[in-house]
Length: 291
Image (cartoon, rainbow, N blue to C red; front, side, top):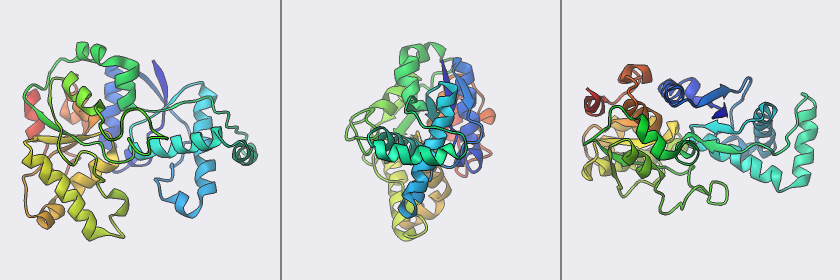
């Protein structure tokens, strides 16, 4: 099982712990990740507001790099997944756009063909690898750990672009959490926006959003929050202290990327996945479950 790996910007910088965890988990499961050489930022749902043609061409190039390898493209970021899938959908359904983009790509010796699928590591673990097979690899079941399943926006919506599951009633995270022995907490804000993309223009409102997610997870009995998105993870962890003051308290809530949680169950040490060093909120409430 092999994929072209598109880490995206944040895994190369602020969320290196997620890169570490993803690579370690893939290796443990025998999933080969071949990182794309020369990948570029997906645009992070911002560039297209100013220059949609640049965003489209950039992501066509990223996809073309995977096509050259004959591999499907895997990400571990909700926003990267959305941006790449949006580009693919537009190019595959608009021949004129595809021709225009390929004229640009021809200048650098590239061509978009539409032969590569865009997938997320969460989907790969469930659909391609399989949860029954994953269960067999668990050496440290996270029995007793109560995990708030937080999806965020971009891995579910819009349904026309993503389409892995019902965007109003998703189950993928709960299924994954259960497979590694932990208890999923279906808390009320699991589909809310974390506010990452609006933190600077609408800081006060975003702190309310961020704080409410963490506070509600704590209120509903979670020991931690787990998300498939490094941007959501950063937002809920990085701004937790400030957001807690805005919403009036709540306990410290460890925020993990799904790769980290799976890694713990597979016997990968916390240190190999950047815990606790690369987290602002202490992760001891989680790591104690693996000794």
